[in-house]
Image (tube, rainbow, N blue to C red; front, side, top):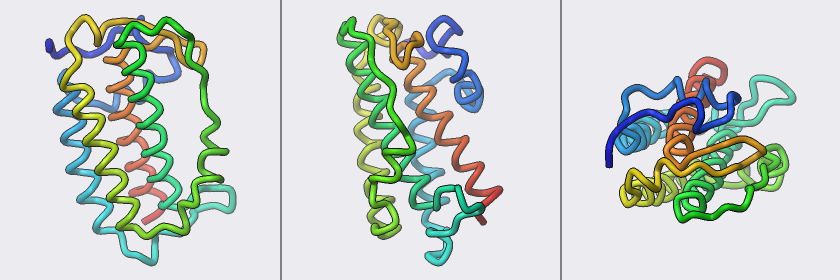
Length: 171
């Protein structure tokens, strides 16, 4: 696999900020580093803070992390379908409905962290086995172009975005 960042033709403009959060050109390294940094960070959050909301209409930390897990699953699925040559336009998803139906607040922090680890490891394994041709295929999701390469960078950058929000607004 050649390490390079996605070009602006590989993703919709909405995702540019997430992609810009990721340092370097190696998506596998970014995903592995993100896993290590995120698990370490989450394990240090006091149990009493996990159900905190910084505003009445905001998610709890549990809900934010489950949102990360769900979003990673969606983007990894999109990456796999496009990498395999699927030409179907992929629909968006309602993140608020996913969160409100996730039962995140009934879960323990340990359960959520274990779920995060499992999903991230599956994502790493998927990207480990995509060659340059597969990474560069461009499909359509949420009415915007997306390549598997861009999907990987979006996953990593979306995680950085939300970890920053947790650090700045929840703790």
